[in-house]
Length: 82
Image 1 (cartoon, rainbow, N blue to C red):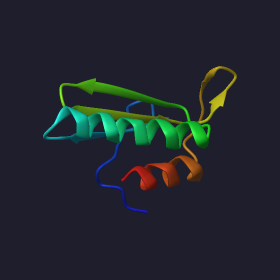
Image 2 (image 1 turned 135 degrees about the horizontal axis):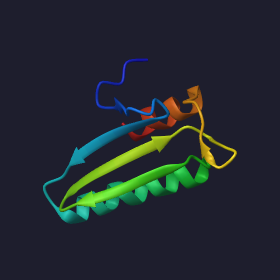
Image 3 (image 1 turned 45 degrees about the vertical axis):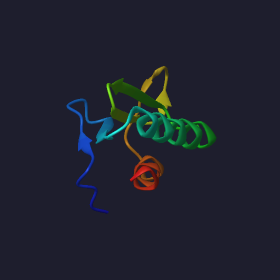
Image 4 (image 1 turned 30 degrees about the horizontal axis):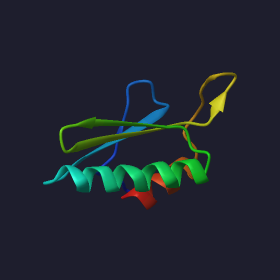
């Protein structure tokens, strides 16, 4: 599955996507969508705001308190986020 909008982070256990929006309310709505999706799927994620830019980081499933390997489920959620 090709996901050109996502980047593999140096730790190899997380992927990140940055989205820019014209308006802050659009960034907030997108972030709310990501939060609902990741919570429903119990997907570890970090969401950061910089003005109207949103950075979404998806982490591998937690194993012994640390991010584990990326799984097909993580990639499926990344695909759903876009």
